[in-house]
Amino acid sequence: MAPKSRLFQKNFSTASLRSTALAFVLIVLASPVRAAPVTLSCRVGEGSDTMTLRINYATGLVEQLAPSGNPYTNRIAPNARISDNAIVWSVRLLDTGLQTPVPMIWGGTIDRLSGTGWEEWSREPDWNVSRTNLTCREATKPKF
Image (cartoon, rainbow, N blue to C red; front, side, top):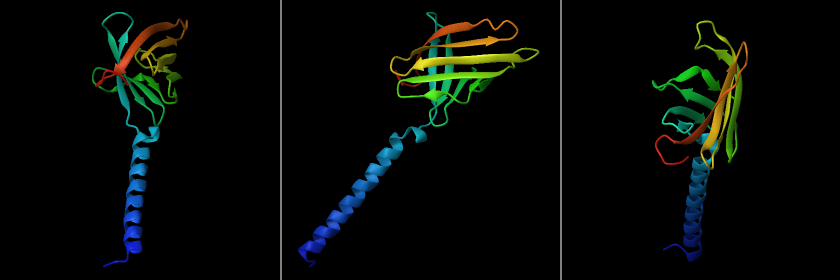
């Protein structure tokens, strides 16, 4: 039979190791760097039209998805600012949805607490801004 102090030391070491491993797993799972991209379904304005956005919290990538599930080439923002409260993006790119692509700006913001926000775009030659209000939720859950 092992002396009481060795048995206590063995049990304490095993419990300590398990606790440390569990804490590490929880930190890794909760870390935004490890978070998978989230797909949001957003109602446009007050109507029934929707748009789908995919947010990659780890890289700061915001993409608007086509019905096919692929991102529109003129709706990809690689450097969004993402905080606990908001997702904000703005990018200069080419509007490839036209016969002759022209420079454009696509941007927006989503309040992560309420799910509300807006997206806007403008393009050459007049740079008139087209803005729509959004009410978003995670595509598979009631909130994100």
